[in-house]
Amino acid sequence: MRRSLAGRLLSGILLAVGGTAIAFGLLFQWIVLNNSSLMVKDGLVGQGEEILDNLRTGPDGKLQVRMHEPMQTGYDAFYRNLKYRVLDAHGAVLVSSERDGRPLMAFTAVDATRFSHSDEGGVALSVATIPATHEGRRIYIQTGRSDRFADLAIEAITPAVFQSAALVTILAVLSLSVVLVWLTRRALRPVRAISIEASRISPDSMERRLPTAGLPEEIAPLVNAFNAALDRVQEGYRSQQRFIANAAHELKTPLAVLRAEIELDGHRGHERYLRDIDLMARIVQQLLQLTEAAERSSYAFRPVDVVQIAREVCDFLAPLAASSRIVLALDGDADCVLAADPGALFGLLRNLVENALRYSPPGGTVTVEVAAGRLQVSDQGPGVAPQEVAFLFERFWRSQARQTDGAGLGLAIVAEVARNHGWNVRYRPNLPAGAVFVVGFNEDGSAP
Image 1 (cartoon, rainbow, N blue to C red):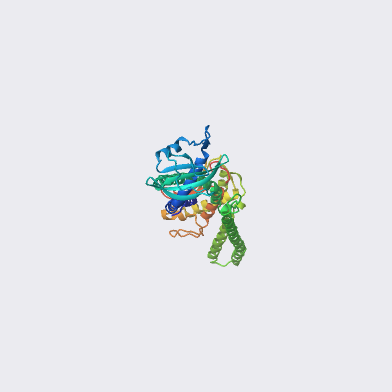
Image 2 (cartoon, rainbow, N blue to C red):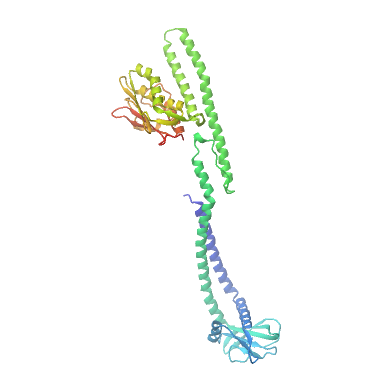
């Protein structure tokens, strides 16, 4: 099952973001479980820094800690588990979070932060003594918190961290999804453009190549390789066309000479050889027509009166119709003018009428009808079996049910001429008996 490039990128990003969030959560849990003492020390130091920031000298010259309401409420509510002291250089308590005037731990004037444990009223405390200077005065700030408070803090922080990580992950996934879809569509816009351009390349426009301007570096080599492949295909196609044309031209002269020699010989019984030579000459002529019809550059478009072309075809094939005792009728709309190659249109209609004359019984009628938007040729022959309709316009295909001296190239020529004009040609049965071939023109009568 194929997946789009945008889908693959999006799934990869989602997996990366989700994996990062899970890894972050596990890492945070590991840090909390294995570095709780380090977190407690950092918390005590941060607590001391906040006390120093809120330390003020009152009008009476005494120090005060003026905390904002939430912080002061915390000290009041957790007075047994969260404490602080401000000491002078001799260890005397200047400010305390409670009325107790004793230091939280034995005081020693050391210019470095020290950590220890103490027991206050049956509550084990982790204590830090932090040297500091306030208004040029040397002081020491002692902060303490119980293990119970640290556990409560971790228990309160952990869900918040995980919830925040989950929220950030969801928001990141949503925002990345939107941005990724937009970026992917923008990045793939040139790819879609060259895909549309590639779909327009056909045998009659093989000189077209895919543009490489503005393509991503990853896509440009693929487009260059595709263009190189088109060069090789075009050269092979042209070589094949040249071979068919050259072979047909080379055969025309020997066949003409052979026919002339047989006619000059004058022996009886040569009619069969002449018939075979005529058949070979007709096949060669059709090969030349097919080669020319398949080459788009050989067409010269100009306004053409379709009725006039149809009249010329009927006049040209009138002797064949008369010899077969078939009525050849023309029903034309005088206003049908198209942009077309007159020679190619003559060849298309000639092949359709010749086929109709070949399969129509003596006494039958072949009708050429020209109307707005279509040209059709109908006969009163045996028609085409339903299972054979799909093969009608293939080269060298001939029905097994009907013996004919044709090579199976007439309708292939018709299909090539119609394709290069942008027309469509289709078959339908002519009830009660016969076949109808309809050529549909462009609605505006323009050349492709």
